[in-house]
Image: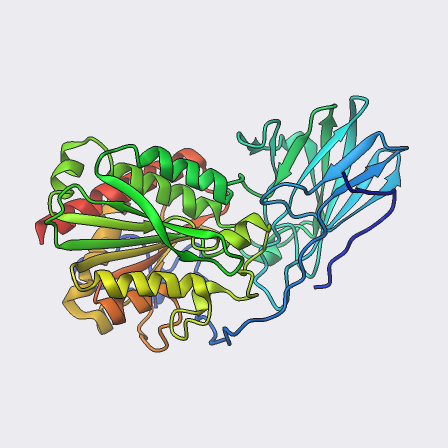
Length: 431
């Protein structure tokens, strides 16, 4: 076991629409805008490889080797630790490269030879404390840390965005001889995701198979839900282009489970529709604890025009081949952001074909009125650097980027994924 001694610090350098949109009018007045307004237009950026610096992996030992911190597990992010005295520790979290979206992912283990309470302060490279910490004693089952054990340092201002987040945070952790996991979000590593895929693939009409390798040579798997091999209509679902975006993955998971379920609606739907899903687009970034990018140092959701990265090329090549056999009628890319929001393509450019997306949003909103979800529609198709525009322009499918809030409750995420699946099945069967 590699051990870093006390005080060793391995620091890496490194047109808005509300949810009550009308079926025949996809625009609203400025006065109707409310809640989270979205991130604005995405800039065009190069997608050729950029250098990244991998984090040092090992164990930090303190207090005469009685207290330990570790990042030796998939999904970990811990770049440095220092002991400040009086059972207070400072940890540093840095990004894989810069510039980068402010998504400061962290995940580490801590344990002690003697049970004690310690205080850990989180610090970030050019960022603030976006993610409320989750805690686990087994690395599988996580829950938010008790609010009495969380102290925001220099709280932010406003409701949404990085300025609303505290500058840093102090956590009080009860440590024992067994490791405690602290993580920005639940750990859904490539292994955990594949376990879920494999379990669902026990159904006779579901299979999963490789479609290529990632930058770091991890296998990318696609799940195919195909009850009727004569079906000619297809759906394309992807998730987790950005490693920290776990809430989007959880909604996607519920979406897929609902379509794969035993309801009469799902059974009838699967008679004419096949579903193709890549639940983990960025396995390297996830397992390496990245804030945003793949191992090429690139935001994959800016590479759907130039296809410089193997992960996007794998999906492109798969779709080009399947397009010969299927009429793709719907596409969704699940993400996470500051609050729930939909990013469809406006009907001013898609015409009648794209109207189903807005009908779908309205139907979801009618069934889930307790949480209003804003809509930010794009009226531009060029460039096709983001997934939804590529799916529409190149494969003719009405498509959407479906974003879930970082702190949206987990039961609601599951319900929203279920409702979203049910409503799109109904609409597609009506066509």
